Image (tube, rainbow, N blue to C red; front, side):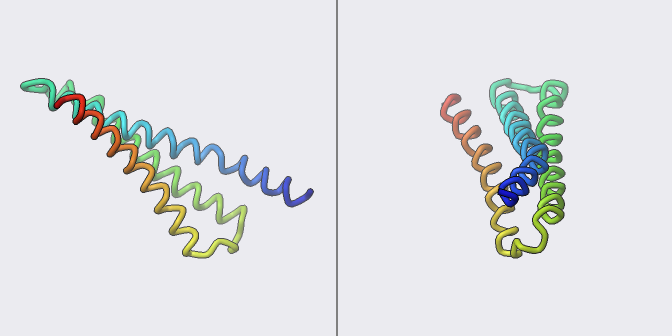
Length: 115
């Protein structure tokens, strides 16, 4: 029963950073999608039209990266050296693949909608 409590506490401590990664990924997708929509739908898009979406995309990517680094530190503190470098790399690759998949899906949906 003690290990379950430890695991639960560890997961709760990691939750804010995981939610930060999700929020950052969503912001990046929305920002990139908005930029693409404005740049492809308007004949001559102005800088002020594209700027809010660019900022949202940049902040989303930065939030995703920052949360990822902080989550790695939190995992290292709570779990200790039990995770091998192979497992750490796998977790990082999965996070990046999810982010890139969300972006690709949004771009594909936008492309289908505009064609």
